[in-house]
Image 1 (cartoon, rainbow, N blue to C red):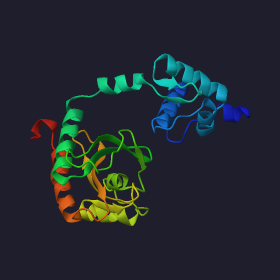
Image 2 (cartoon, one colour):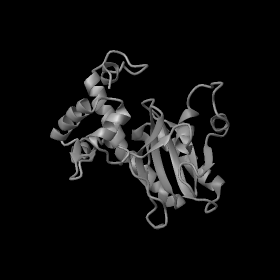
Image 3 (cartoon, rainbow, N blue to C red):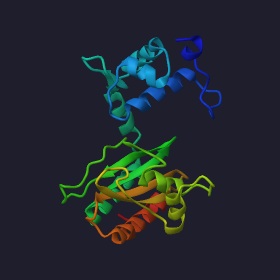
Length: 238
């Protein structure tokens, strides 16, 4: 590998930052998808020399942010769980409570997503208590922002662009996105854009088997609960 490959130029759109920290965060983001990887596989995906990636992984391992299995593959460690739990505040707990109520009312899986680069990342997910057949969605799951109901709903919060896909343009008019097979095959999804009180662009979605629900009824409930999320947290009524 050439020296240019060993020390690639900073990614477009990034100012002066810590290159080592950025690389470590990029590695963690890759592992956050739940797929375990060897240092060689991570090096290939990050386009870095394996020795650089190995040093990063060793440091993350020292802080329990990643864990190495017996087969040499790395995964997210318990240290990440501890960090996540320490950062959970009242707003996050309120979001989870609102999602659980929505899920129970609709007998569908409810997910709350926020945008991270080109992905819609699941920050909270709940299943209805009385519907064992509902789909489970892992917190931290990622969907393409331009090819999933949660992501398209988030994109509808942005200003109009000539590059907008039809679903985004329609969502600006109707206030929701309806897809079949996105992001899960065999499932329908309805998603509403949510701009949180702090300005964060997010979305609230319901997932259910194709043809299993009255879509308009799902949309009506989705609107009610998305409005609750948009309100300041201290105004929420649970």
